Amino acid sequence: MQVTKLRARSETNGFVPMGQYFARIATQLEAANARAAKSQAKLDAEDARLEARYRRASASLGQAATHAEYQVSM
Image (tube, rainbow, N blue to C red; front, side, top):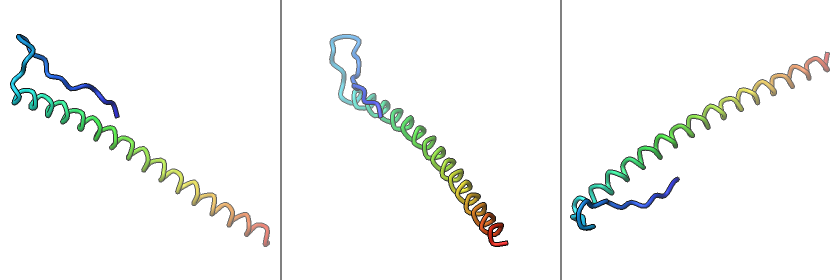
């Protein structure tokens, strides 16, 4: 997660009405949350894909061992 300083900019004297200031902060926080959610969803999808690959590989290794044991017993 990236931390950025949230500061509203004023065009005239350096002061910003509180309503505008908090509205800008809320907008920036919503955008940051959307980026974080998108990133988390991407990581979750990758994790699920890797877990499925691991399960398939483990299952095929288990079957290969069973087949090898069968060959030895013959």
